[in-house]
Image 1 (cartoon, helix red, strand yellow):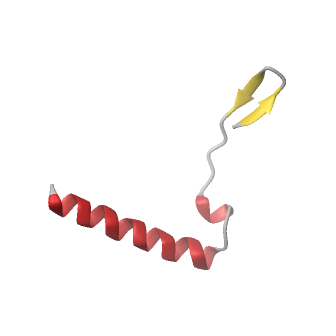
Image 2: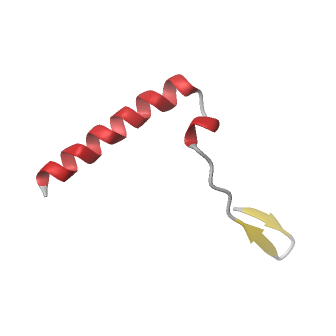
Amino acid sequence: MIGRGEAGEIVLRDMRTLIDADIADDFTDVLRGIAAAARERI
């Protein structure tokens, strides 16, 4: 959240713009694997 006086706004960004693409892509693969495993357990 970015504050401006008494107001604020939420900024949504692709995580790949925040960290190195090599790390983000690997991290995304890990998260997708965790999500797939969770879906299989339901």
